[in-house]
Length: 208
Image (cartoon, rainbow, N blue to C red; front, side, top):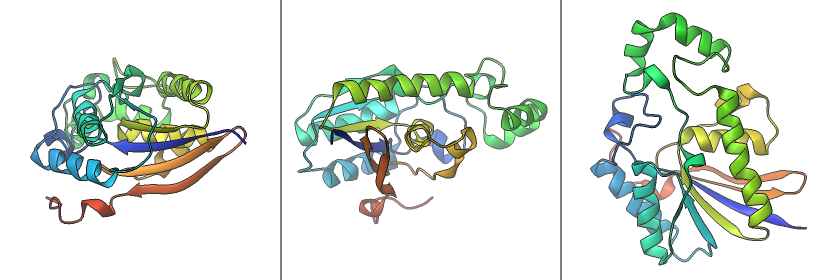
């Protein structure tokens, strides 16, 4: 039975993550804690047989992937389809600021993902982008192990689509910074072997 082994890594922490801001497509660097997380992640993956590494082309994911690539002596292939969802006018705002400035807009968005904030990506468009990448994996990497370094929203959407969940299923998964999630894509089903694994980060950075 043919399959694709998929290792999904979220990027390390940034200042905007710590400040609870909508980041989206803003090209924010890892902070010091995030860089330590990326190195810990790289050490944890040392020795794993990985055939190819893909990463979002945004800095926080690219920096995390580069640390892993150096450790494995592998190149990283950037792919803009792996970018986080674009949040339009909410980008750069804290969650509280957004609720104060755009309460009706956020209410509509939470009720219907295809009524996004001004300038933002709809849930359907975001899902189509992620689906395009998944189809690429299924047709181009049969019986290979693929590492994908991306964002929380992308990893949740890969899980949602792979497990054939409804749109609200996107929110069923907690994906922490620098976490690992592992799934195997078969022709007609998906098997989850690890979800939001962060045990290798213990003692690396504090929670503040």
